[in-house]
Amino acid sequence: MKLHDQRTSYNKSELSEDIIQQDPFDQFMLWFKDVQDTSIREANAMVLATATAEGKPSARVVLLKEVNEQGFVFYTNYESRKGHEIAENPEAQLLFFWDDLERQIRIEGRLEKVPAEVSDTYFYSRPVESQYGAMVSQQSAVIPSREYLEEKRKALKGTTPKRPDSWGGYVLIPDHFEFWQGRPSRLHDRIRYRSEGGAWKIERLSP
Image 1 (cartoon, helix red, strand yellow):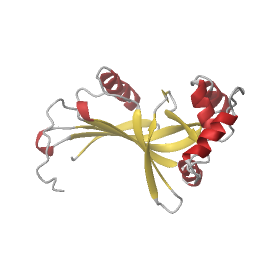
Image 2: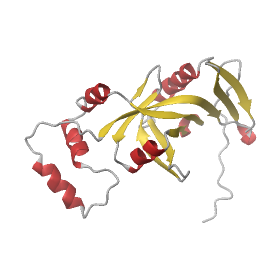
Image 3: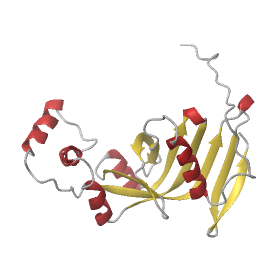
Image 4: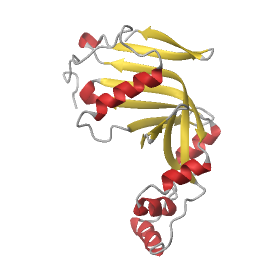
């Protein structure tokens, strides 16, 4: 496979200190509104990167479900691989990439579990089949077959769903944001917000 000549020129927009928001949450919401106005599917899909206590990394795509004054919320199984890694090392990073807009956002911070009542509210707002799915799945565990899952699901038929204690939300509380806008000649715009003494320091990074 030869990919040397596969190139894209980025020309759609720019990112300058003159136009950015002073608060990175405001800048995120501005860009997120832009992506919601496009035909991009799953605009809230993001890569979550975690690592073990020894620093061995892993990454996967999860869905952003809320942005609030504290941070960025997603839901998963606490007993999954990511859950065990977060318990060992709560430092993590989120990555959004929106190809149609030639933009990406990296967000670094610390993960904490959301309160149980918040997880309950979201869990019971999901379709019933998704609730059953969370009850059935021992995420990341080795299982014998697809049929094993299907049989566990059938066994729940007609029962009232209940949120498992092992399933719930995390919030990433950020201390770094980096907004990346593709530009011609690979001279991309990179603006970083860094938490410093309770305020956000804005810096331009070399592409």
